[in-house]
Image (tube, rainbow, N blue to C red; front, side):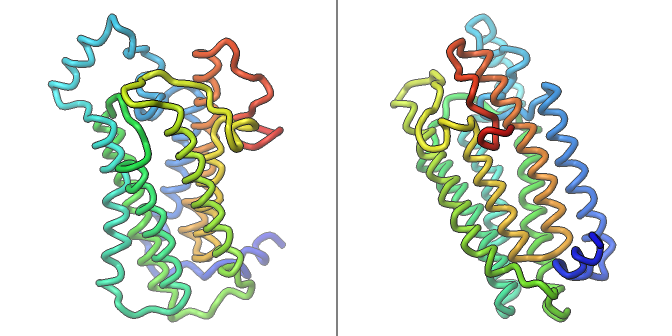
Length: 278
């Protein structure tokens, strides 16, 4: 029954061992990363940078400087740009490499390119940074996003000669993507307004859906990735999205724990990701 429904929702996997393998690898690696977040083994960026080691204390600033000199960290703004720029350029270059395409293919690569363009735009003009990013983390996430962009687009290119899925989800995916990308941007903007120029202190966000969950930007990011999957309707896109959901659940759980450790007055009724539930 479940298999029958799935076959009506997705294209058959393309005759590519690499893409099929990457569908499995993406799901498993992202899910494992989410489990590591829950266990306290956090990806080293944003407020979780060395959270378990507390190297942001004054007593360890010298250690941070030494680490910087060894080339193991980069300024957060540089690191975050490297996270998203390659994936955006992959999406952009697909319009040159594949000048012709059907409606679904053009829709998919437009959504992927727009998603990562927004992230680059936010890094350059919205977010406020004060710390450093681990180079290994930067490289890992950048490769993950750029490979997703490349594989999702190329996979979609291969489906153009195949029959459409029996149940068409792309017209559901379009408005869902717009809600996801706008909601994500709005809550990133609210986060940026918490800091004034030169301010390095974290505050508890309260506007928008922050009154219900501490990571509404992750919630809308999940919505955006799920929308891309609906537009694509390929096994790879859904596999990456499901893995991303598990990762962002773990990351939001770790973020909530971080806020609880930093603020004694953190509201207990504010969940991690899903209002009233999780």
